[in-house]
Image: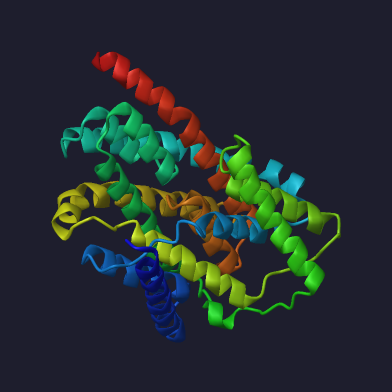
Length: 347
């Protein structure tokens, strides 16, 4: 696509996404800006309309999410992390058990090849699973569609189902507290974002775009060098961009192709989400746990997306971020080893 034409479609995509997000947000729907932008761009992508995915912006947006997470980390984070061992144990147990169930479900009920079934049942980073599948000879389009649906449906369903399960009324972003940032605050905020993007490019650290700016931002706040909190307008801009990015993952996917993978993807996602909510309910009933925060921590959504939802919903951000970072690391380290094992067995 010529550069000027692409720029025009990018601006058109942004304007339409903002309008759709504003409409849903005005209804009082939680995460209305994110969900509105995602649904509009997703629909446009499936109908082959010329939308543009914000690939160049996403590293900075994800780094901004990490910076927001760091600003929300409490001073007693070390003590809290030690106290989280029960929920972390449950999360790793869910990853293994649910992963095994979905692997066998996809292989024996839906006829997936072994490597495709493994990568589609692994709730890890979508880009990483596609890349591993490319090297292993998996159907990249199938892996991409299943994981794209996983993230999109998690964004749509988790806040709603968790709110119903725990009787929590979640405020929309329009009602969220607004903060004022000084020029030095903006400088520290942008510095954290730049550090995150640089680390992702130059250092081989898993989830660097989220992890590095989160640590930098947390260090600034815990040492009281800065106490910035991003204004609601910045949060809205991040929500819209993330929504566009998730929706645009369906570019090039026809309705017939989506329908062909829909049942298998829905079966995988239904098991992942239902077990996450069930585990959160059980732990919440034991006392001392925020069921909604646990649901977000156990949810099969993306690291950036679930962390952003935790920030927007005002839940225990550090708990959610810690669980998702470890979930992604678990997937990144185990998926290549399991793919190699399956490949050797096949040979």
